[in-house]
Length: 122
Image 1 (spheres, rainbow, N blue to C red):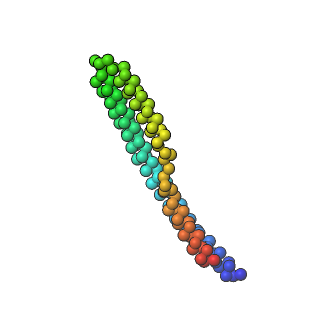
Image 2: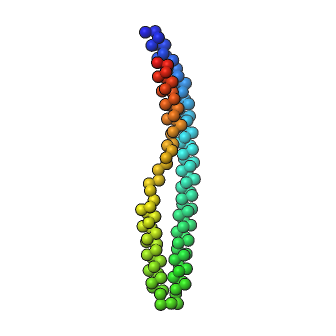
Image 3: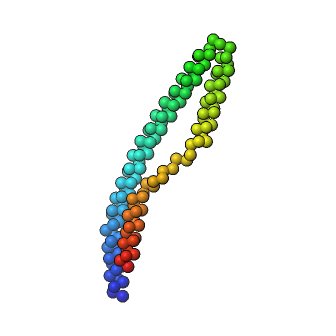
């Protein structure tokens, strides 16, 4: 009976020691994920802006090229169709952006190691 109490006390001490480390790991993981999110968001905004701008100017260039020809209206509608088709393809080809790595993998791994250690003690 005293052996069980001693083991429980050892587990309790171990848990208390590791609790502050878990909290620190969670803070670090949240900070890293926040920075990564900001970088990704800024990158996506810049890419989107420049892509839209280049597509608009490419469409204007095509229409201006055919301006003095009888194909002016056809070229304008062709540009519109190209934009619509591109939007359709991008919308359906883009999968849901999920990270294969969780933000808290390190914390989970540490918890699993500690649980294994506690099982070994008991």
